[in-house]
Length: 168
Image (cartoon, rainbow, N blue to C red; front, side, top):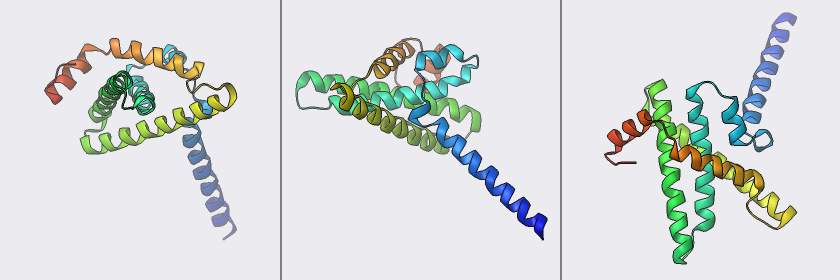
């Protein structure tokens, strides 16, 4: 009976450890600049994470620039459009792995909003410290995301264009 309790306690400990590890991996305390993350990657499938994070960043910025003034509204629309492209790309990559389009879309959409919330928190913290919403960290990620937007692999562009019926 004692060994059953020990095994149960050990299993609960392992589950708690796994949960906290997954939670930390997506938390803002552990985000590194995207350019550093990309430089460390050798697996082309790492694009799913990069595209998801860029989608979250673009979504956050689109919400900031949403305004009735024409210039800011155009910026917001461009950022939102890029968010949609990156979300679709990340979903497409996941879909090719798990063959479940609905599940892939839902999972990526949830992650995009989590990243949006992380960038929102970073922005608010930076505003309290420096009086600016966009931190150097966020500017660096924005530059990296813009580079990613210009260098999307042709195979992804072709596949997404075929699925959506639109040219990217």
